[in-house]
Amino acid sequence: MDPENTVEIHGDEEIIEVIDLNETEPEPEDLADDLENVDFEEADREDDEGWETEDEMEAEAEQDDSELTFSKHTGSVFCVSLDPLTNSLAVSGGEDDRAFVWRVSDGEVLLECTGHKDSVTCAMFSHDSSLVASGDMSGLIKVWRVETKEEIWSFEVGDLEWLDWHPCAPVLMAGTNDGSVWMWKVPAGDCKTFQSPACQATSGKILPDGKRAAVGYEDGTVRVWDLKQGNAIHVVKGQDGHQGALTCLACNKDGSLLLTGSVDGSAKLINSSTGKVVGTFSVEGGEAEGSRDGEESNSVESVGFCSILPLIAVAFLDGTLAIFDLSSHALRHKCLHQAGIVHLQWEESSSVVSTCSLDGALRLWDARSGGLLSEFRGHGAEILDFAVNREASLAVTASGDNRAKVFCLQRPDR
Image 1 (cartoon, one colour):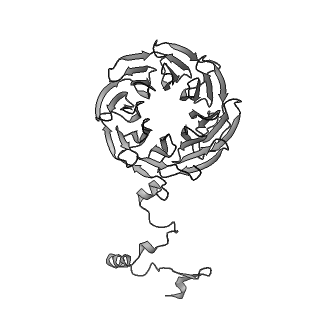
Image 2 (cartoon, helix red, strand yellow):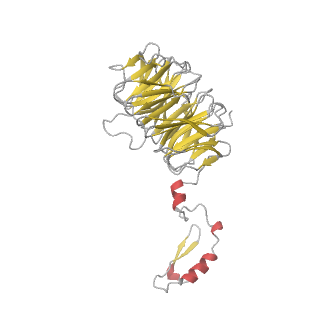
């Protein structure tokens, strides 16, 4: 070795040869022989300059905490939910115009919901898990019987915004881009519509009593509908109401309180019996990159009630998860994310709230302390939806990386 072409690094006494580019280049055959002698398995794994395929780089596959990956979708997976009866089945809908019903234990497909004309953005089981509804952006809604795998009903509405099943009957509700809210008995097809101003019905939910539904609209109004009579019992608007489009809506266990979120940066607590706004919640900016632009308000993306304590959670696009006291309306904790939050869900029988965000991570937070309990990674893109089972032992996620995943949430302290 030419002494002029070596560099000595005294720390490790490592000798590096500097190749003289003027030397004769080796023939391809020689290179192939050389490569055969290199043991890639023994190469230093800690060296980040190792060779990576494009797929590996995209997926950031170095950390995957999931138990199972469901990869039958060929486009972004927009929605996922669990069957309410056993929590053993998931239904996911995606950009590939399909929904799949699959087993969370092994990912086996039980039913493929085909025939859609656009991305499937809504997919959920009926109260007894016997039926599954899938809805696409164009407004084509289909209902399938899970056991027989047959399509038993379909209907076409305007551009679809949301679907919701009745809590104790085979009745399906949908909200559309033109402001219409539809309700059907399935499979009989008996239909009722709830007319309102010609603006998007952005979010909606049938309340636990099964007799009323709360619907939020693009103009900031919230309506509580009587499902039997077909009339609006309450309309929440004006100074007390939201000043921007509704983004999300939740109710407490007995349906006596509603919690709504809006692009106006606030959440409203509404008494569903009187239609009165009894609380307004907002926060100062969080940490997410590129989330705030000058005067633009910080949109509320998801809201929810804790089942066991008087607490509510409000998730913002700027990455702030805010925990408020339901009685005093005081801000208890701000749980900061580095990216916008997409969705939150409280565990059914604890004070743990889970979030998914645009950075592709699922996080569990202790609402009592505001502390981060666990973080789960594995997706190569943002998580767009997720669901946690009753026992809070697993979560199913849907992502822009074309995959759904199952994560085991068991922790040592349980």
